[in-house]
Length: 421
Image 1 (tube, one colour):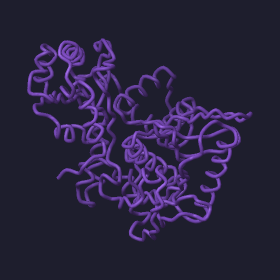
Image 2 (cartoon, rainbow, N blue to C red):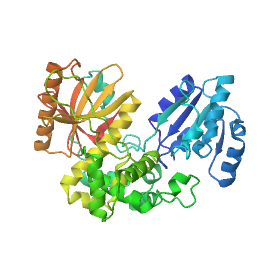
Image 3 (cartoon, helix red, strand yellow):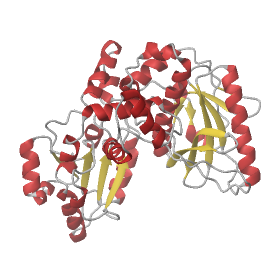
Image 4 (tube, rainbow, N blue to C red):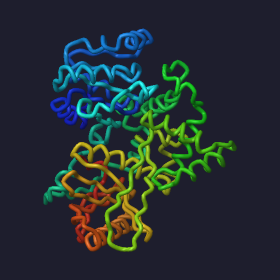
């Protein structure tokens, strides 16, 4: 069974406007399955023999009907250079599709950026809309366009227990398609295999100790959805694991985690505000999928239910995952805002034409919704009065549970299981 992915529209567009497309993202997020929809010939570099042959004769990998799909291209990095040369000689749109779940083992083997010839696309795990667990009655596109068709929906079907399960299961297609009684175990197996590098052809990963990677992830998870500094995370590693770790070692392991597309920090939004307000520039710490954070700490749905404060931070990470997927599908980006007055906004979606919407992320409940709405209105007023930014297209409190409605002050309340691009 195949569930339609939002990234398909972007892949189709880039194949019509670029000589090659490279789709990168974490393992098992569905890259190859989706890209197979567009190929007319393919090769998978998933065996020692195929990898060895590709390294000996990278040019030969390009032979085949176009579009030619090359899966896990980074295992023979010179393929990138050969594609560039081929496109220099005979440029045609949509000749190659590359997929990869890590960056090349030796980045020096890639001799050019590919700008103008090879277009990168980032693929994430499935959102709730893609996994058919959001009804999609609230559209971000409609909110940006000023539609008046906002629903009123009590949303009684979704419980906090459901959200906890979705967060711990993650958006991995193999887990989404599995029955509920084994889905969490499948995600656990995925996490346990994430750092098995014994037979990895990438020496850079083979030199990394899995236990150190896991302890860094645990510290990162303890600071999920915060602006914790790298110094703070290193100190947490030392304190909780009773070991020394210098900044250089930490940076080396962090690079490996980012090369595996496990972490995805959200950058800070820095509008030009005409006042003494200082805008924080530290990114917010996030994961590509909340299930990785849950597994790194051994957290299950029941644990989240027993610690609502932690639940709220993990839910923010979960919501940012879906918002990032939705924003990307409509040509937008996600950032966060925080200044020295304590004013903050969990997610700001910007579109290419300058429109923006501000979102506070809360589990639900009248008090939390009121707090989020008041913060959003304060941010809107500050931006309008003291910057050159236009007024926001919408203000929204995104919740885990509860109903969908528009408040009297104009702020929208939207459960995550009703949201779509």
